[in-house]
Image (cartoon, rainbow, N blue to C red):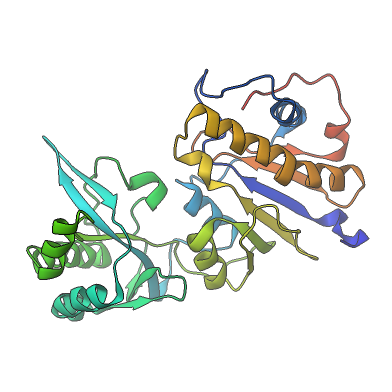
Length: 315
């Protein structure tokens, strides 16, 4: 990295960083103690603008805007619906073979045409729904909504009503579909519907030049915003502009032993190289963000990193 990096930031999104007491095994790990020391020296900074879930937090950093008009894209994740006593729980299903996907999409075509929508398959295997839309119409992203009780979405606005009608139509078109009957026989889970989430409209102002990590969804968001993407959260920061690194594995409550492994990797592979760059004047700031809690962003600057009197924050 060149000396011009002194104007850059690295923002590390760590959903699930702040666990409940006792959730981490091996508190004596040197790597976790180092991470706690860095977090303790960091200072609270401005909070995100109400983003819910790491996907939405990343989209906000990449300049996506919730309101606008024109062609809009939704992440369309196939889900299985499990009824409870008073609710439904949406769960992701195992990958859908290409032939099965084509059969399901063919059955859904009348519903898609009625809604003025279309489905497409990305290079990374993600399903996407596209539709002309105006205004804000997005439920919670997968990391927040999947595996939990579904909440009824607002029906205010034309696009929200169209999406609700489409969701109902898809469930009816795929109910008892031969593909689903065979998937259930094989124990793969039926495709009852789609979990639709949109980051909004790309093209807003952003200082971010690279996204590191976050898997297929991170790549999808970065490509939509025209931003460079690297699969490894420990990837080298961008030559110019800010970098967002995402470690989303902590967000899925792992076992204490697995959580310790992840925190050690965050400390050694993600944070430590950036702290060295910070101390050498190659970075302006290193920020730690847990989108799953209400705490503000923690920002570590060089002057903070050299302050030894701050009490460690235990992740």
